[in-house]
Length: 428
Image 1 (cartoon, rainbow, N blue to C red):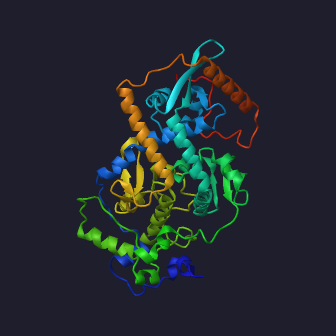
Image 2: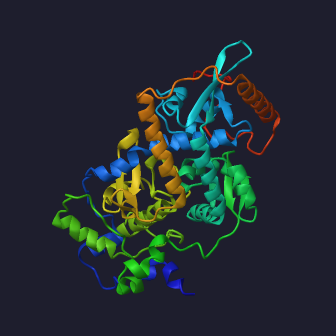
Image 3: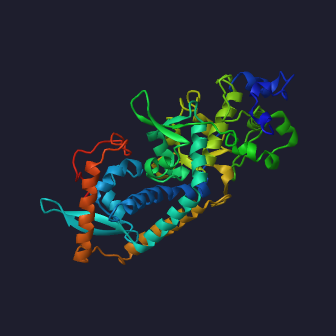
């Protein structure tokens, strides 16, 4: 009952009654043609710049630690390359060898006698991985709710697994969430075959307690009492230092903030997509989506295929560019990453999750590994303990055999998004 006013349709908000002039009138009935310039933010660029290697290394650590022998050949790891986000011209083995303090290299021989690189984890990496798993276990209900809220943002509470795969690192979900996480909550989720023959994940029931956006949750702290009463919630705004707004743009933004706020969990089919009121709803959807992520950022391409699922208009990602005070688009890592400005105070997250702290420790390990390698402190070990290598080799063979014999729900589902022609590929 107390949140009923938050979910009423935007058209019922009466605070604009009688306003028939200026931007307010235009914004209700059209999309005002305002363009704001992009200004580089070095602080947020620094935050984004280290994320690509951290994500790739973190995923590899998850995959290796989940294997029966905690050691996998390069051709097995290559099957997951599609989700690592590494440049196409960078060999996976080259990337892994950059961090010898995390990945320990050894060799086995294939049937033709050719040495095949295998990688296990260092004690430091294993320690952090165990801490990460402990945090995931302790906060399982929280991550369950994150996934629920993501599905509740969609029109039918359904998303293809490939779409969730693109967001799982950002959401903090386990790499193998389909098996290790979703199956633990049969009361909440179920798998289904989509009309395009892909496998999707469906939320089985709506939860009113979760259908409250972050902006609504913090309304009493961030909003004026009059705006709360009128349902015209405003987004926190922060611009890059030195960012100058023309008077015309300032006036438009001020009036735009006063427009009705439509909850991203509310049916917005009544809104005309050609209006600023509709755009404010689009901004609200992205604002909520970024708040669901651990580090309040995601690559722009990760949301590019969410248009139909989220019931968004054409060219919906233009909202990022029209609102640089809410979102920052970083061009680092040869991609575009959208960052929620309000979530950061300098280089630090305003609310730092325990899992983010583990990732920060992994990031420190990566930097140390690069530095130690440049100093020649780590050398390849092709010999090693033959007994230990034999144990690992047997473990790998057993694992690959069991994988070939298994027939699970996901036998047709390739998380990397492509098929492999042979075992060895070209990643040596």
